Image (tube, rainbow over all chains, first blue to last red):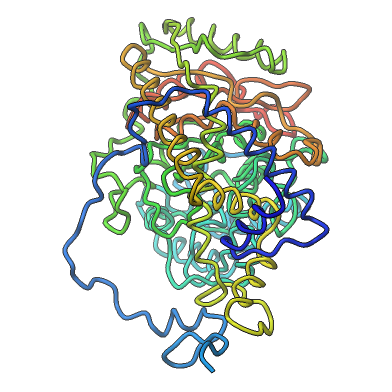
Length: 93
Length: 483
């Protein structure tokens, strides 16, 4: 784990790391990755990954409208919105 | 009449015999909550609604199974109109427009949701030291952590404010605080309780469950919490038994699996002695001890610290400052809005886990870490499948020791991660598991973990209840043994 890797993953995570905390974060991440690296000692050839303990296909349901239109309630909890949309800083000049 | 340290069963009896009114119960809950405000167990109290519901119940008594029972809800469940923070600055002012299914189920059964309990931020932590709203204190001793992440729920019960609380458990977040606070808590089988309206941390591991003073009370709560919910695609469409039915079954000739690969030498000596005493107690109840092998158990913590951060980094991408939650002030463009909002809104532990998740999921590392961890996860599950072909339950200590002091784990995150050594494997395998008090070390409680086979909550509740009919560890309170 080096500075360049941490810069890449913090960009992917949309997180900014404060300069003063960078060294500690690199050290922590390095320790954690070192800790999980012991998984590499295990022989997992021909073992199917287990993504979910139920191993069942997600159930589908009929495509019917069951909830009422919550537009007003949902826009009300937004940090910035008008009557119809969420508002963000201008993207296109 | 007081409800302090009373069980749900006892309070139900007090209500039915008219020894106390619903309004008096709510009054006392808030009196106790205020007397214990130094514990910092609650983020938000729900006084007006609770008094209204109590008065309605006094005017129109209800036959519902949990009518008038005050319950504290972990602040990770969405509650319509009531602030829900998940212990994070980023949700500091979030008022959900809907209520989680499991909370609705409890309220439909008559429970009064008296407040939202403090927790580790986004349920990431084992000591309740990562909440934006400050540390929760353990009523068993000054400066002691209550465990985490459901530490506020555990502290509120252990201090006698409420008889019951909801919790969630991704790697031990119900069982570990239950152990450190001397109460009982159960993580049901993955899929038993709907996750709809639960703020997601690691979706293939998260499961909600009850916390209470006794196994019997947990059974009562579980009866109401479980449901098949079409709004959650992982919600199980299986028969839900009445969890009270098998509580008193004889344990004669039932088999308890003892993990022979478990290295007990790193544990507090007293924990081992107490664990062995508890096993003797079960033998005297007629159960048999059987050696089992879970050869991949020691890999469960590293497996978890790949799978959980990976799922967390995906789930927490929704906190972008656009649709709900807190937004940073005056971002100059959209990119800065995302980055500033997230950098200001999340605490250090949450950031650490998001970064680890991004790393293990990124191109070039996906197979080496994420896929590998999921393969090991299958090996761990297979170990359990084989073990359960021969035993009814598996027992371990819940934690490596009793409650520790705040700040004592230093700043190495792995020391904290190892707190969940015994609890994490049940989440990886999706199995039900419970912690119940089985001893005291220097007047600090600890717990015994009982893991059951898939959908076999009734069996672990049966073992736990029979243990509590013979022992009184669940009667211990920070003020002495309950009469």
